[in-house]
Length: 145
Image (cartoon, rainbow, N blue to C red; front, side, top):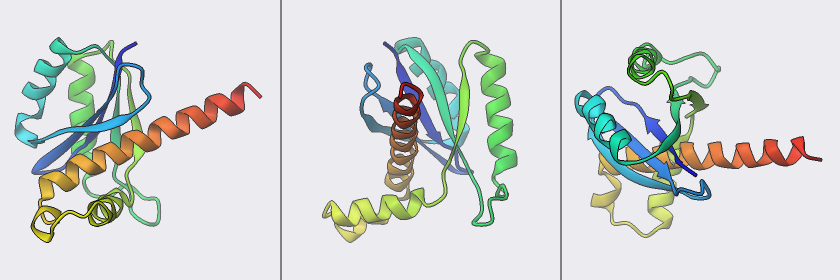
């Protein structure tokens, strides 16, 4: 099997997470400066087999798209143009930063580490991907019942 890649797209930094080849576990990969994201993805996609990309969809509490959605959509259009064979899906990313901070706190990270915005973005991408995997499993389980 191949991997699923998740992206928590930000104006300055982008968190990236990836599954294992069996698509069982999501793990943080890295955080890259957003302006370097296209080159990073090109290198990664040449080195690893990726089945699909899941991109965090920035929404407000009222379910409206946030102001960052225009940048996310432009990125997704460019990605699809470069890789038309690669399916891209959106996943709700609300609360991922809060959950990332909670995970860091519960994981015992020191305050200085918890303030590392790049680490928060990477963990947020991991949460987006893990939630995607759990929803996929739940849907597949219901579909076979």
